[in-house]
View 1: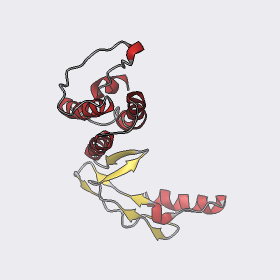
View 2 (view 1 turned 60 degrees about the vertical axis):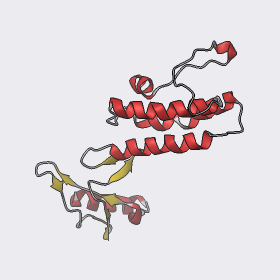
View 3 (view 1 turned 180 degrees about the horizontal axis):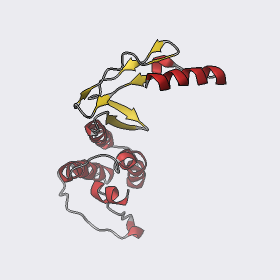
View 4 (view 1 turned 135 degrees about the vertical axis):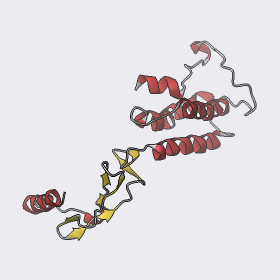
Amino acid sequence: MRHLLKRLGKFATWAGMELCVPKCEATAWNFRTGAAASTVDFKILGARLTELDPNSAFKYLGIRLSCNGGTAAEIEHVMNHAKGAAAKFKGHPYRWDQALGAVRAAVHPVFTYGSSVTGWTRRQLGTLGEKWGLMMKRCWELTDGHPSAPFLVPSEQGGVQKHTPARLAAKT
């Protein structure tokens, strides 16, 4: 790795690129021993890279992962986002169709973006589905205690397809 970082530094210099080394981070995991590996000697252009704990989550292509393969931080992020969004929809000033559009545009994609690589369990999908159900009730300006049994309304009268995390996960 040190050799690759040295080559990267030389290439960046040759190409006239400026690297923002303080934003560069390194983590390492020894899968044979099941322990963290040292990144103390990882440097680019003489500057040491910020060391990340391999058990801590980091964002890679927008998904929270840990070096040892865990996706618990991504699941926690999606759950917290849904919980926060549900709180914001309580007593919203929008028409029901505007509120539903906001859920589909701003809440569902947070889940679907990383769902294909995140290790969701059925229980977690069910919990997330409950949070989404609460949001849907609030979009329709129903009470939080309104029965969660699905109800069908023709699309001409404002009916929408029910989106559940399990159904969306199956599509990705």
